[in-house]
Image (cartoon, rainbow, N blue to C red; front, side, top):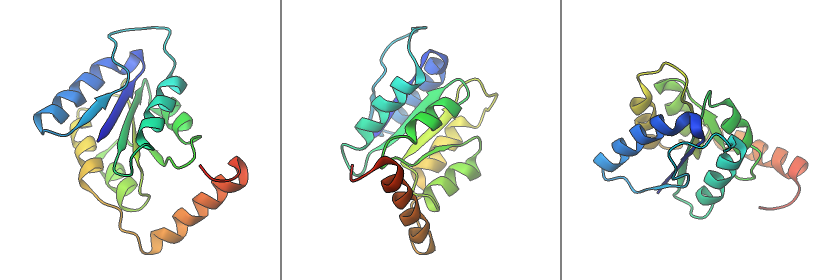
Length: 151
């Protein structure tokens, strides 16, 4: 399932992505179901998305804020999350293939008409494993050292 959430800056982009997911019959959950709320903060949205992603092994997240930077930083504070801020299709593909990213972060204020292609690349590519396993193990070791213990 795709878990999607945005702050106020990303509402229109979120709606566009949800329309795409719906048209492709891809299961999704909108965890920030509101039209506009200036008081919402991207760290709160990121945390909600990440908690839901971690509930099931095959969940993926899409987190949206103005630039994508804020949600990317916040998501990557959550143990077990590998969030990638992707601004083009190649980055989205590599985030999945090489980094086994489980959350796609997108900036709503960027002038990127390729957002659906970015989402497709993220959802349609799979982790390659192999030499990348060693690197992901190192990321988990960094998480363990700085965040302590298990999830």
